[in-house]
Length: 498
Ligand code: MN
Image (cartoon, rainbow, N blue to C red; front, side, top):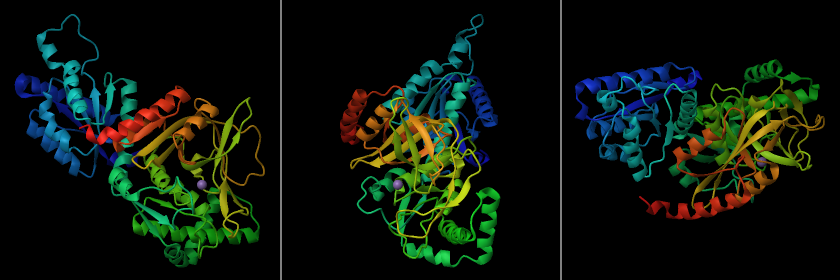
């Protein structure tokens, strides 16, 4: 949580000179009180900075210029205490690059029925001031979150918290570097995509590195660094391994030292690997990837850079929250009509941030890739609510699929399964969820989180200005197909709208 406190959300209030200095002073005071309340709230992750009330087009434009260029500012909360004629906002909103939320609130919760007079009415005009602002945002086709309710309302604070987390992740993507060790798994479609378009749309860059570049870093790992890594493993995990297996773990530790140095020196926040390109590596990196994810790196297997970036964003959003976030794959189904569920896992690379127990460090053969047996952490995941998210390149646009789920206990122990695993029931049920996911072209890889919910992802998709399709309790296949068809037309026409 503290990490997100270094980021600022600016509290912006719109008004005009019409009301005179006394009223404007009151507007300033009230706004500063609300900003302070949010800033001090333990439920609000970012620093909330009060900005003096905006009364002219120039003040608004200057504020937007300042917000665009402030590295700490991740977004704006806008509020219309009074009426703020919205043509004043056109120039500012035209250039504003940061996400914003329209807080449709009012300083007083209740109407003071017995004392209300015209002065009160003139001061507290959010009900129609907010509508004027809403019009210009809609007229300009601006994506923004609208939150309605009194500012002390628990739900209002919760919605702001969610939006701020998404804004921090969006800020994190701007200029982010993703390292791709090797290329894509050969012939795989969904992990491919337009990296130039992604950089334009999302702000992050993806670049490939020969595995030999990574191997050079691994060779430079010093015995003392490897010893230190081994000591960390013994402390953090259940380790009951043979001498020979421990030698394999030592090789893994060496890989981890090299990977960490490569990523840190290059300033990368996410990375991909592929088991088809391991030249010079003795093992497919399993344990190192799991541990790097636990430290906040985004990861995608088989060259999946979109999921690597997504996992990183979800980890930023989930900072300080209960429940972990991991790279995930729908692996196999339980299709029993008495309770259909998905078993999610990957060959090795599941993040221990979602573990329910102390992970067990194990070494098993991997029937793919033709390398040494790779060490990996094996664990279960606690029951609770989660969400699976996927981003695909549909050719003319990026699409996000969002599917909340309920993580359940496996029906029995899985003593022979040598990987970390999660068992979940997707909303509304497996048949509709998997059917819709497939119709939506959803990838087999996802970002999975037990900290976040679908609202975090919707806010994020709207900041990125991409299509999202929700698969939840309300979803029917027939409506879902309609959404896809309508979106197909919408996104084709969108560029001509404004
Ligand atoms: Mn995979």
